[in-house]
Length: 115
Image (cartoon, rainbow, N blue to C red; front, side, top):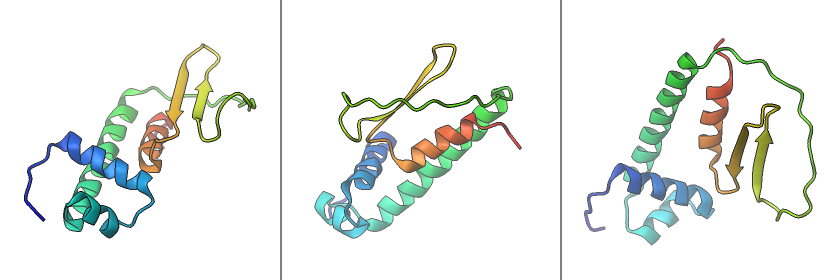
């Protein structure tokens, strides 16, 4: 594998692309010409950054009250189109179908009140 210096954003895209690919890390890395060790390292670093950001946000967000949820079926949307949460005050939270589980956990953790 040839050595190539990549930016943090490039690694973030590679990690997210691997998560969506359905491939093993080894197969994905062979296809992209990167080392498994580098992919694992960047996956860990990005997850640590996300957790730190969530903790920082959580420290700035006042305690929230949970509201009842009403599920609305939308037959006009394609399967896997994503998730939209609309709060009573009109604030919308949209999660695309390509959002990784790790990233969604970070967002949810940031919205939860600190214990």
